[in-house]
Length: 144
Image 1 (tube, rainbow, N blue to C red):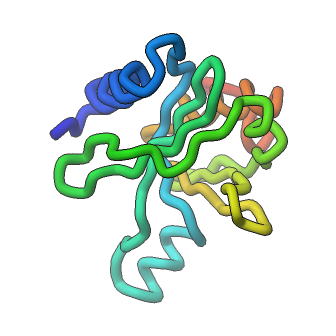
Image 2: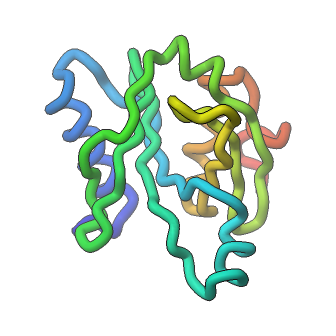
């Protein structure tokens, strides 16, 4: 079980290499799709949504389900060409604990909110820069 972010990122990179030896991850972050985690917790008393590792590679965007008990990347749930992912990405906002962006998943009529924990904010900034050409919420990397 990888609980350190660096170990988790390496496990996702290995999953990407197994799927396509010619592709290389550019940025990986953990996302929690759905409404605000705070609202979900208040309504149900727990965080019960399925989590994903959102990985931008040189050629694709992959969303791997996170295996609950082992906290490792499972099978890819979605794989999109990078050029298509650029059109599906909508910048969001940086917040104190939970930042977010929107991404239109295949088969969905509207973009899904992707919540990002504070620990993954540097990766969120790199993702937004790579897909949208600017930082989430207009705040550049290195700002609180």
